Each structure stands twice: as structure tokens, then as C-alpha cells.
Image (cartoon, rainbow, N blue to C red; front, side, top):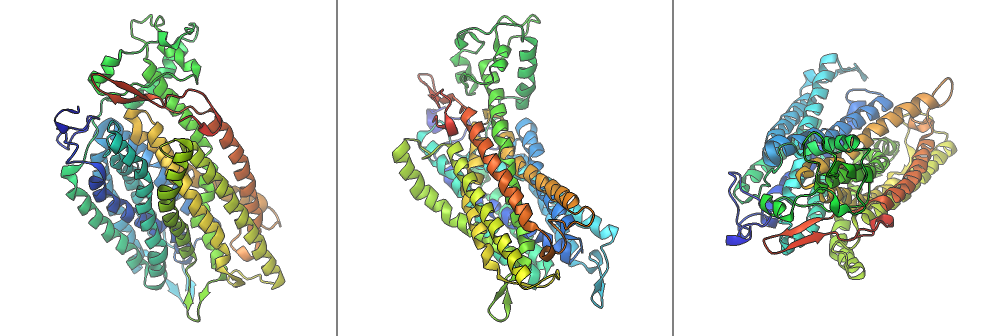
Amino acid sequence: METKGYTQDGTVDLRGRPVLASKTGRWKACAFLVGYEAFERMAFYGIASNLVNYLTTQLHEDTVASVRNVNNWSGSVWITPILGAYIADTYLGRFWTFTVSSLIYVMGMTMLTTAVSLKSLKPTCRDGVCNKASTIQIAFFYTSLYTIAIGAGGTKPNISTFGADQFDDFNPHEKELKVSFFNWWMFSSFLGALFATLGLVYIQENLGWGLGYMIPTVGLLFSLFVFYLGTPIYRHKVRKTKSPARDLIQVPITAIKNRKLQLPDNPSELHEHEPQHYINSGKRQVYYTPIFRFLDKAAVKDGNSSGRPPCTVTQVEGTKLVLGMLLIWLVTLIPSTIWAQINTLFVKQGTTLDRSLGSSFQIPAASLGSFVTLSMLISVPMYDRYFVPFMRRKTGNPRGITLLQRLGIGFVIQVIAIAIAYAVEVRRMHVIRVHQIVGPKQIVPMNIFWLLPQYVLLGVADVFNAIGLLEFFYDQSPEEMQSLGTTFFTSGIGVGNFLNSLLVTMVDKITGRGENKSWIGDNLNDCHLDYYYGFLLVISTLNLGAFLWASSKYVYKRETKEVNEDCIGIENKALEISPLGLQV
């Protein structure tokens, strides 16, 4: 593939023709993509960061119901990418799946803007008494929200992987550029989130919800226009397998059928194609790793009485990769639950505090989320320009530290953040008792900037967590399932939101039984939110221990990294299993 200057990884243009490496892809192509990510994140956080306030002040839902509904919607936004990634990897490809889904996303934003703008679609108020939203009003509002969730299902897993596809893994220079790609991709995402939490939230509360939702809708349309301008220079990966997820079913079934067979002492005796097969097909060969050995029986050569050839080592290793990623995915659910507090209980907590800035300006409680984004924006360049080169000199790892080490650092910072959140809430409850505050609308004489440390630390943690997880699941996925692989990242956030919704509901019901005071009540000045934060601190600490155990068992992918007629290189040669994934 190197001949005539074509890309070495077999990427093509939209019409299926080989593309020239010098005229396509890399950062010049990604420049057309990052705009969409920024505007899409602006739209999402413009909704998510203040949705709990809209539900309580405009649709008049109670605190627990509004938190549950925000979590359920956010969870859906992050879960639906599983379907979008499967459609992309199996049928339409990333570009066309993104195209269709982005139109659905824009339609949902248009419907939501209409829902918050028209008086007929909002509850009416007379003399300070507001009616509850009608069935039609609720149905239209939530239909709009979940239309957005469906659209996000096709855009979220495909736009970032499509961006990563613009770098040729077989070209050493482009592979080095790709190391920074996810850092700067998330940087553009953070910019969109910053404008949402600083600008859109203020506009929604002071100039109107309709204008606050119309701005990101127009921005999305503009970013799509820019995205399609870059079509001539985009690289598209060719689908080499009709159903890439089929191996996930075939390998375990074959292993079960061969369960009585003896594994050979030498793994090289397992079934595998000749290296020339992978050279000719353009696929990557994945090499044997000594984990989940029960699956190796699927590649035993003398176990196919039906006449079908056994699975190859590459197929078996692909299934092992998914199982390994699943293990890591499970220990990301609690951190995602902690992250869900930013747009729910942290916001409601902020509404009880003194938000005055000067004599006439009040800080919207949801705007404090901008400090999460600001800390990210500051941390990403520092991480990429200073931390990575420094650690690269120390460790010899191109990334500075391993992907799992990056996650571990993020999880530790997050535990510290929730510990501070607990301490601040204990302080808030003390001030409430001293001043004998009981009313739900009474302001606690404690400045809202007391919440600042927990927001900032969660932002720093996310530089390690969010970017690290996105890169980890993309990098460790089997070649044919990289869109589906990145949905481990999105689905983890989604399940974390659902888990938070479940926890809030269960804690409210259990602690509020009889005459007992609920930990999470409508009146945050007369409940025990500090107990709930203490509970989150305990499970976060336990989860950190579970992560350390899971990472000690993980073995990184070993695959062909350079393929041509004369040379086959192997990536991730180290086989030993060590704590925090220390193998390179």
C-alpha cells in the first residue's frame, strides 16, 4: 500500500478509491470534525447542566423525580451509542451512520427549542400558583429529549473514531500524531461544554429558555455544514468483515464444544492463518496472550468433527480483548456515578447557597460546572505538552504512562474530590443548624464558591479518566469493532447515570420510611445529603481497590503494527502481567 504515496492502512475515499497520504487525513481533515464536537457538546451540556432546574422550576417536578429523569435521559444519551456503533461497524460505516444520526439530533434540538418556547407547551401560572404540566406537554418535552438521545446514539461513537481513522497506524509519524489526537479532541469538547455552562445557562435563566436552546441548535447546523466541506479529504476505513461482532458468539460456542479436548503445550500449535493471509487481506494479526485460556480451545486444530475449520488465534484473541475490556468497564461505573452528581445534586446543592456576586448579579448554580471545564482546558495542554514528554523520558512509553495508569490516577483524584464534597456538605449542614434554617427556599449564609474545589478536582480527574477511557477502548478494541469498542466508554457513563438514578431512588425510599428524614428530600436544608455523599465516598474507595485488582489482570493487545511484503512488526510485545498494566 505504500506505492504511489497511498496510505498504508488501506483507507479509501467516499467512493471506495485508495487515497493519497499527502492529500488526505491527519489534522487537516480533523479540523473539519472538531467544530461539530464542540457544538454538539455545547448542545448536550446546555441541556444537561441545567435540566434539573428546568424540570423543577418550569415543569414543577419534585427533587427526586427531576434527578431521576435527568439521570435517565443522560444515561440514554450515553447508552444508545451501542446501537449506533453496531450499525456503523456492520452495515453503514461511520460516515453514513453519523450523517443520518446528526439529522435526527438536529430534529430533536428543534423540537426541544419549540417545547420551551411556545406557551401552549408549558404549564400556566396564575397569581404565583402554577399548574402541573399536562400529559401532552410532558409527552412532547420528553419526546424531544429522547429524539436527541437517539441521534446521539449514532453520532457519539462514530465522530471520534472517524477522527482517529484520519491517522495511519502503519505510518510512524502519523501514529505519533495520533497519540495527541484524543487529548485535543476532548479539548474541543471541553470548549463547547464551557460555553454551555457559562453562557447558555445564564441565557436560559435570564433571557429565556427558548433562546438558550436555539443557539446550540443553530450552532449544530453550522458545524454540520463545515463537516461536509471536508468530505474530499476524509479517509474511510474499509469493512473487511460483514459481521465483526460474530466472533464474540462463535468463539465461546466453539470453545464449549471443544471443552473436552486437550490444549497443546505450545500455543503455536493452535490454528492460525499464515502471515501472508493478513498481508493479502489487509487485516491485522493479533498474537496469543495467556489469559482466558478456556477460550483457546476454540482454536484447537483437531476438534472440528463437523468439517468446519477451528477459529483462528486472531479470532480468539479478539474475544479475549472484549472480555478484558469488559472487566475494566465494570470498574468505571462507580466513577461515572460520581460524575453524574455534577449535573444533579451539585446543582441543587448550589441553589441553597449564597450566589451573589456584587449587589445585583447572581451566579446560576449550574454555571459552577464551568469550573470543571476550565480545569480540563488548563490541564489538557499541560498534560500533553509537559507531563507526557517528562514521563516519556522516564518510562520510554510513547504515552508517558500506560493507559491504565492514567485511569488509576484519575480515579484517585476523583475519590479526593468526593471526600471534599462530603466535607463541604457537612460544613453546610453545620451552618444550617447554627442559623436554624428550615425553609426550602431559605438561603444558607455560605458562599457558593465553597463548592469550587470539588468541581475543579473532578475536572482534573476527567482529563485522566474521560480521555484515558476513550483512548483505551479505541486502542484495545479488535480492529473491526473500534466503533463498537468505544461504546464501552459511552455506555459506562450511561450505566453510571442509570445507577445514580437507582441509588437516589432507593436511598430516598429506604431512608425516608415512616417518620425518618430522607437523605435526599425536596428540602435540601432539612435532609442528610452529607450521609449520601459519605456513602458515595465509601463505594468510590472500594471501587478503587477493585480497579487496582482488575488492572493487575489486564494484558494489552499484541498485534501486527507494520505490514508489507518484507516486514511484519509486532506491537505490544511484552507478555507479562503486572500491576496497573505496566507492560507497554
